[in-house]
Length: 358
Ligand code: TXA
Ligand code: MG
Figure 1 (spheres, rainbow, N blue to C red):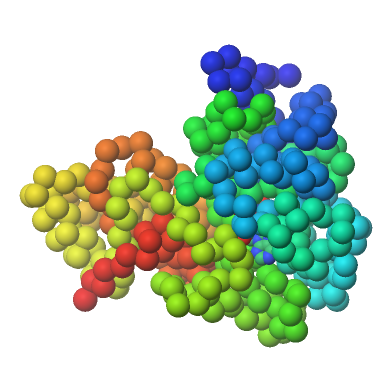
Figure 2: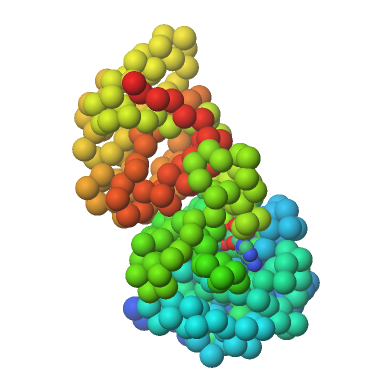
């Protein structure tokens, strides 16, 4: 077993290969979860901080380690479809259809819970969010742990979700016994959450499985009005969506307009700020990075391959936290499929601060 024990902090990191999973590492991690401890593990979206979902005191530990408000419910991760029936009161036809189309994968369904799921896991709600992740490491761990792992993203509350084991270590070293390191995650932003407890399914958090992909399977699907851009009037239904998440240390502004307008505006703003003695960071793309004259320019991905932007977004936000920039200007990324999800995360990171480049 390739173990790197960090003696200073007490948090062990075990590197795993998804194509050839070391079973002894999974057994160790499963044993920790079954005994009520926390283990961080990779999923295809972001790293999760796992605990036994059916034990109230294990879920409580998650809130303590993350500094998470206790009204913010956790997602229960399962490894096989039969297990949905064991923790819910009712599984509608829509859930079976979506599972057939998208599980295992980056989709979470909100369903009516049964008495096996403690209110500590659901933040006091009578519903439970359920997801079957695609990562083979995650699936092996869930199975070994008894079938139900409650796992929020493995960051300290208010920090960007971790896409690398190193991000988890940065946030949670000394607070948890074990991190399973499966390398960099694939998707890079959290799963789509869809509420199936009302007549018409509603997206509570946009993600890689888009509303139109859900509509192809279910027909009409709504988007929670509480999560539309900058909407402060309306309370989102997923309790976690109301918090200003993912906030970088520097002040972040999103600049909107056409590509040329954005580049021109960011160059102007950067010039001004640098003259007044500030350090400026710029979130650009591969296509635009060369057009910025000053500032610390980081490319988040390729505009023509939008999944690369989702994949790198949180990593870039963390990189700017490591540098000493005072202010960050980001391009906006209203790309065709994942644009809603990407902009939802970016708007929250920016506390909805937007500049129109017109
Ligand atoms: O991709 C993901 O979903 C990752 C990985 C680890 O699986 N997990 C994740 O968990 O993003 P977390 O805790 O960071 O976000 C969970 C979101 C929160 O916004 C929470 O309010 C919402 O899910 N949620 C959980 N249970 C809910 C429920 N019963 N009703 C409505 N929203 C719920
Ligand atoms: Mg989170």
